[in-house]
Length: 113
Length: 114
Image (tube, rainbow over all chains, first blue to last red; front, side):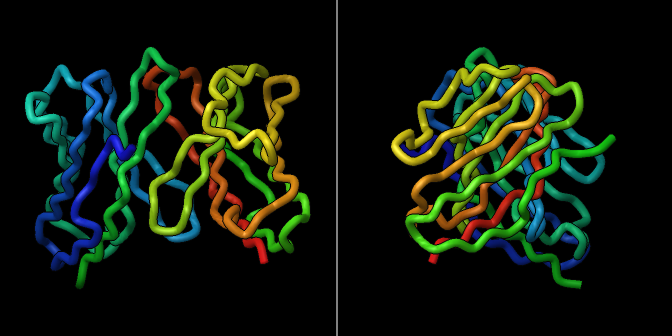
């Protein structure tokens, strides 16, 4: 059962544009929602994370928007740069259950110069 | 601060052969995770250790996979015998504690079974 669905599968954006990746989850017990960035040949690296008691979190050019009632959250990358080209994964976990991360399928982002 | 170290980075073996992966977590991190990542997909948890105790191994195929974390530091994941479908990247991650704390991933071991 895929508990976290991610879209789009791939995304091409021009330099300076806004990249938007969406995720939807099913399990209402999830209470921690991180986004990971993965470059080829590397392990995933935490980009930004949010807890369900806030609707938005911003760190630099990266923003998570969270809609608890819709069970959706999204990653916005402002002023996208070629160096942002990577695969992005949303994830969700239940902190009291040991933080087993359930990942989405991933979005391959390409930022053209 | 050194990150999570994994070795080998790449491994090619024939089916039915055994293989082992090693992970050294970040110093002081009590929780260690092994994930499996198939091509084009997100990682999936295989096993989680709290110190030396395996507290979540429900997704580990125990007929052929085994893991250990002696002394609560380094960990080894073993497959015996390997099957063609085991070809994937095996990721190790660690965190200070479980419960919403940031997980730091190693670079992974890419296994190819021929």
